[in-house]
Picture (cartoon, rainbow, N blue to C red):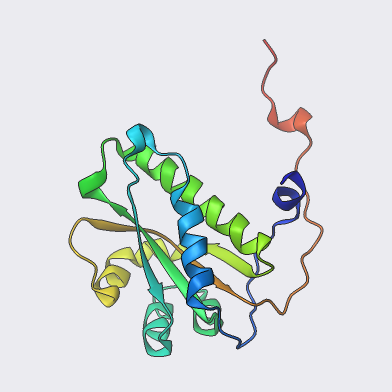
Length: 165
C-alpha cells in the first residue's frame, strides 16, 4: 500500500479504450469507503461517458482536452441534504477522491483530479442536470494511460513538520 501511495501520479493522457462499468463501479465503491463525520457519506457521483456531454463540460475549464479525451469522467458532488458540517464534509469528499485515485492507480489505470473547473461549478451542475443541493467538488478524468508515471518528489519532512512537542 505504501508503494501505491508513493507511486500514484496525476495522469492526463488516455487511450481511446473504454473502461468497463464494473471497474468504474469499483472505483466509486472504494471512494465511498472514505471516512466521513458521523458516517454521513455526503458524496454523490455522476458518471459521464457520453462524448457530447464531456465536450460540453470541457468548455468550463482550461483543461478541456483532458475531459474531452478521457473515456470516463466522474463528477463528484457534496449532497447538502446529507451535510452536517461543511468543512468536515469537504474533507470527507477529499478523502473519497483520494480513495478513488488510489484505486484507479491500483487497477493499472490513470486518473487526474480536476479542481480548476470549480470556478464554473454552477454551469457544470446545469449541464449534468443534478438536483438542487448538489455542489460540484471535483471531476476525475480516467482511462487507460498513454503516459509513464514520473518519479515525483516531495519536500523533506524537515520542511513540513512544524514541531515535535
